[in-house]
Figure 1 (cartoon, each protein chain N blue to C red):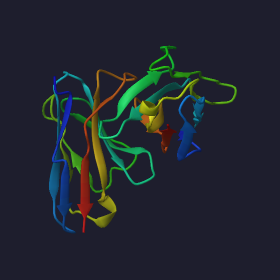
Figure 2 (tube, one colour):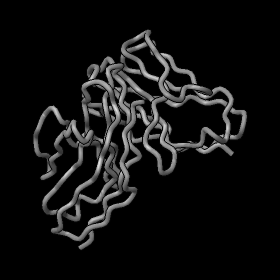
Figure 3 (cartoon, rainbow over the protein chains, first blue to last red):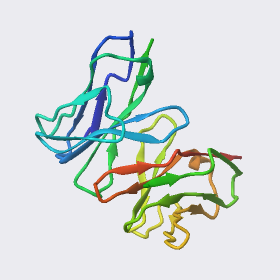
Length: 112
Length: 108
């Protein structure tokens, strides 16, 4: 049982490049989330999804897009990478609202 | 405003000493509070939630609505408790709001 799997673990991008951070979970959870964590700060919610085909903005959605075509997958897309998006990105899932969230290992992204 | 505050970035104690990691929240509704922990080279994981009222790895946390606090306590710290600890609040919109985190360092 892998839980929540994120790929890649590390990535360096140039300003203006685009990329997709992958997240998949094998627990059949309805809810999935993307967070970013900047140094010395807590996790901030970027986007979340309560089920396939449904997504909604979190606290810091600007510069990102998501999709949820299946229950298992919740990719996060950066269209035009900016230095301010240098961060560690965490994907999480939960069975439902108010339930504990299960996290992936994170993706460390640097934009130069 | 909905907010979770962990006033200490770093807490350093000696093995066997009591430890208290502070968490204060600001929320107008009935809060659901959690403590998450991240050990070195491991993923963030749930430590405990206030509705369970249980002790995990010797840690307990009591919700004090009067003081809007949810401090994490352990009477005798162990070296393996060294980790990053995050307090989080679940709001009625289904979102987790995290504090900034406290790094606990337990020295031998």
